[in-house]
Length: 627
Image (cartoon, rainbow, N blue to C red):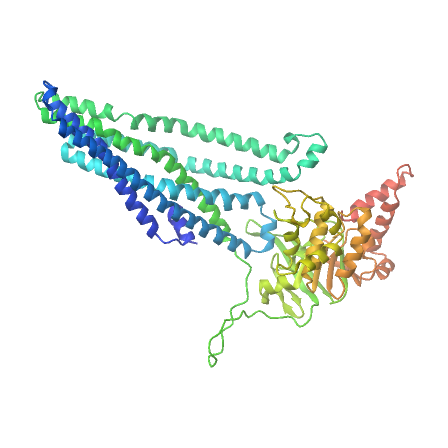
């Protein structure tokens, strides 16, 4: 990780050449100098009038007109140079934005899928959009402002020191005091901590807002308000409280800053009057004092921008830290690049990704624990071993928290195992490239994610180059063609923002259509019919029956009736495989599976009004039957 912080780290991440920023800085500097010309023109005109105060008619009119034209030319030149500098800075800003977003998206795409599952969508979205968007404001607008402030201040102080040291020092005092107030207000440890908490609360609110919007139909159906969605409401209140606290912390510093910068005359006049009182007839000094009084606003006006500049720099610093947290996440380890033989001419360097000869999935003494804040947590799997053969269905059953979903998630390398190995066709999954592994495994989980895109593209993501006929065939096989045809634009209907939201069963069938289209040799299913209504469940079972033919199928079963014909059933409890076999053999063993089956069948036959003994059976089902 780089030791650079803030803007320097930002430019390092974006890898943007500084040439455009240098050109923008030069143009902004020239604009700042030209902007001082009108102030100088006013001074020379007033000086001419002061020299002929007793007889204004004797003042040189042509001289004053000439300075008026020079003032106009300086103003026009300043605006032109400011526009040119702004255009260049905008080009640089958008290039930096592009570089940042591409690098972030590329890195996130190489992270373990488990990281994405455990990270709030709103938090990632805020980093990619809002934190990065701050860069455009800074580079395109406030960086030129910073250059103007520095150039204006340096040039003016240099001129003032040349004219009169004491009056120049009187101008430097409010500048130093204003900057000191800025440092005390924004650079303290307490302020930094409050800013961090502010951004944390904003990030949490963004994350819970996404969930709230998705759950809004249910909230409306039950006649509830935002208060019923406690997490979102609590996050909003926390954000409001930090905003108020944020404002209260800065209001005194902000007011003091404004008062000091608006009071240059209060510092200049006492010194000027004192010096003038020692030589009242000194007309030359009087004109110099007049110059200071006229030109002081030329310093104070641009320095007001420092307040907003400091705020943006703080925002960028916080945003860069959050980007670095993402970059600090280690990507999925890929096999090393194979070195081509020396004797042969160098061609494209292939990845040393091993290709499986068949598609049996083997867990070999696998242990795994989810890490929490960098430390290993309780083991989710402990020394799990089994073989799922190609062309067969392997079902995982067991109580909630037994480790079924962990087994499914480890096959496509959502995480890497800590001990043991997972092999496909005898090849360790860690020796396969991510692209090869993803092409080998298809999965349909209970929690389905659909992109804010058309229905067609949501299905075609399983195979982007597929012909439209193949996409439609997959949709028909997944029993979702009929409801898609009823949507406003059919397959071109947008899902999500600006479009429609599908029901849980409809989303599940779209996910099944993806898997059918992908046609991968290994299929992982997490109760793919969980959200299907009774009318369509039979059709989906038929679709899945076609989908699983000739594949290695690993299915997490919540309804035991769906896996009676599985080639093997793995019964899991507390992260271990405690029983293994076919349905009939497991029933005869009279172990955990037999008790789960009894609880399941009793729950299916349970009716209100039966004897009290049924309550014990229902409790038995809750203990052993995974939701």
